[in-house]
Amino acid sequence: VLENLLNVGSVDRGFRAVYGTFDTTGTYVRRDYDFKLIEEVPGTGGAVFLRTTDEAVNVLVGALDTDVTSAQIAAEVKLEVLISRGRLADAQLAAEQARYRTVQYAETLRRTLDATRRNVRAVDWLQTVPDMIAEALDHVADRYRHENAILTNIRKARDETEEPEHKRRAAELVDIVKDCIRRHTQLQSRLLEAGPLFRAEQDRQAFAAPTARSGLDLYGQLVAPLLPLPTEQARRVTDAFFAHGTGLRTPAAVRVTDLVDTLLTPPAERDHLGAEMPEPDLVATPDDSRFSEAQLDAAMALLDLPSDAPRRLSGLLADARRTGDPDLAYLVALLAVHAASPPVGTAYRQGEAQLLFAVDDGTELTDPEFGGADLIVGTALLDAAGMAADRSEVA
Image 1 (cartoon, one colour):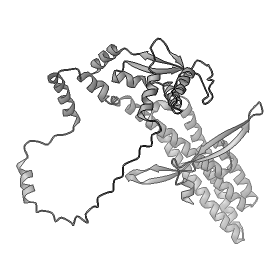
Image 2: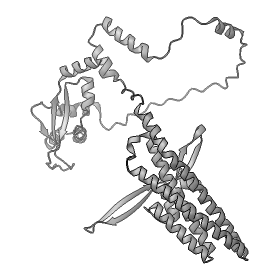
Image 3: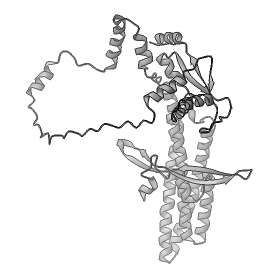
Image 4: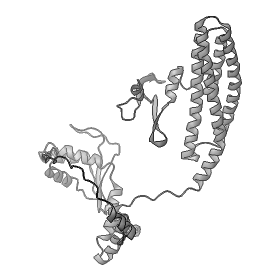
């Protein structure tokens, strides 16, 4: 049951419910609702704890997007009426729903405090959270008085009834309401700690050290600027880089105390190394590429366009079909679609002289085999000298 609630076997341990709604025009719209019932959260010492989500609590109480405070008051009024009428079986269900609401209220506060620990600016501590804390403290005070009155009525019903079933139900209700009071006490203590936690996190995050710089682009910032330099000049840069990038070095001289301890330590008994490992049977991986090197060269020749004369994709597909190769048109279409999002950053770092690009101007492609947009395919010239100067400044 627990594995099914966790949805063990899926990648994100989540569920997906598919449903549909009708919009204002009467069109049916399909929607997906992703949710989880139980989450695995890390704890102290590497342990894993289970925590129910809001969706799971809403399933238990049979409502979605319900205001916690109003639902808690309604549940406890219902509980008091059921107890006064002697319907203890229904009162037990109402008491359990009231406890779920208490847990949901505490979970809302926990998420707010966790978000504050991650980023104090992500939570509105100017108005939203102080109003929520004040409302929650009033809620805890009212519910504490109300639940103590309910507890008195339950004990009275337990002592006055003669039926064993009613006595058992009343005893279970006493335990549930006591648990609600205990949870309210815990919620009150966490509410009182919210203000000091906000001020402490504000001070800690305001004076935190700046984040680390981004990683080094070895090709664009190290290799490309050094290749044109003489060996004497390049060695100074490479020696400095590898001296800081290869980690700690073993000291040239050891301490006498370490040497004596090493010599006086008896040798450890070696275990049997086990059976000899068999030689693996290596099988060459077959070349399952759809396109050959010759086809790639032919496609790149078709796409080697002058910088001042771009062409339509439809014309390039027609030229590819005239070669007699049925797969060449498909390869040209793939390269053109890939050029719709050209890797400008990679070309900049590698110092490319030109870059293939494709632009959609809204013209529809008329082709017997492909559909979509009739892209404008062309070649853009890059400022190689300016890029090399920028890389040298970065280096």
